[in-house]
Length: 543
Ligand SMILES: Cc1cc2nc3c(=O)[nH]c(=O)nc-3n(C[C@H](O)[C@H](O)[C@H](O)COP(=O)(O)OP(=O)(O)OC[C@H]3O[C@@H](n4cnc5c(N)ncnc54)[C@H](O)[C@@H]3O)c2cc1C
Image (tube, rainbow, N blue to C red; front, side, top):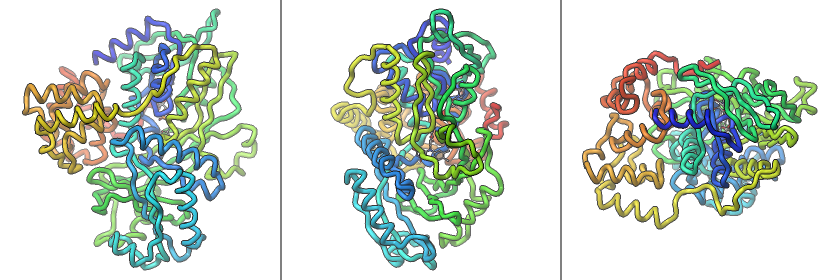
């Protein structure tokens, strides 16, 4: 908690060029981009970083092939470009993956049309991935025997990308790199209101959710990156915008791994929307849904579960169909979709499934205020650059830099892996993912993983697992406690790692080593944090 306590003191006493409200992907990349360009940046989140929508995605980094049906070729080309840049700059985290799409006999398009679309998609992606191919039902069965091909006409295999770890970890790494460059960030700090003083500075009234204390934060510019809560915050501060959010709920169910292959299985659900079975470590993540909602705080309903389970069971040949008993964890979130207010006077008529998934950044130059609407993890680098451009148009001078994102260069990577090899890390295999410890540490912590090698060098026993069955090693925990601002056990199990998605709560509770991890993370508060986690329902109870 030392890092957080220090940052809170600084939030209270310093004046910032920019305050960013919301540490989801949009806020995190804004913080990283602006700090790298030399500004004094503060970042707060009412929950944990990535504690709302940005922890509930499908973990896909993709050009949005499905948007081609709405002829949004510009959007798709832009998203493919964004995907390619992420693939290039984060090779350990963002990785190409094959999608196997099975097409049913009754489907509205002939397989050859789908094949042509995937080729066009590939071209819009500048041919940076493996080429698509058409598969007969027999070939599908050979590749993935668990797919029920009884009603299938053909299939198409094509490429996109996914986040090897998970969305929340991806977001946190941007927050961490912003902090490394001087950003003052704190989780569990909520903006209650904000107004401008006589000098035109923004004074934001905030509450530290850990101890309930309130204080004020001063900045020249205010950026509202509160995701599904952007409109609510703009109402508080009297900001008028052309856009607003409409909300679409989506769920995923985590079940034991259904296929040994590292391939996304894509199907068209009964509502003709695409849905996926996505590999995640030794589990499969199945989803998603798209239901319009008004309230950002949502929960998985019986109907949602039934929809996902019945659709997947109908498309697979499993020895025993998946049931609610197979669900290890559930994920549920809302997509904030940008919608122009002028267009939605007739609410009921809007086909919100057709709303563009493109982000919109609105700037109020007179009030020095920026609102970020919509967006996707995939497009995050563009959000960082566009926000920087807006801030510069608001009169702040930004340093010219080559790049504000990406993994360390090849030389640093090679140095790390050479050291790891010498320390015998390649002989240590993580049980959950089957990968080498060196790979895992580099992917999760990049250049900061050197600190873990230093620790192992001093004490080789730190290579050993800390929490049974989770792949988490002893060498990580001191680093996590010092540098990753873990306030609650859930921050660690759900967002800094994805353990909570891979193991049921019962298994976790019994995991040898978990309480020891708590002691390292929370010191004398270990028991409180442990009990708090296991007595909560796991949903968002902050509203
Ligand atoms: C089911 C689903 C699947 C998806 N799949 C994909 C995918 O595969 N690929 C992809 O690219 N995108 C995907 N998305 C979209 C993507 O996840 C979201 O667009 C993105 O995460 C939104 O990020 P955000 O920063 O705008 O919002 P959030 O992540 O919600 O961040 C906003 C933050 O603001 C904080 N906040 C709110 N009010 C306040 C306040 N008053 N004070 C302080 N903090 C505040 C919140 O606590 C929250 O953490 C998916 C979304 C969903 C729901």
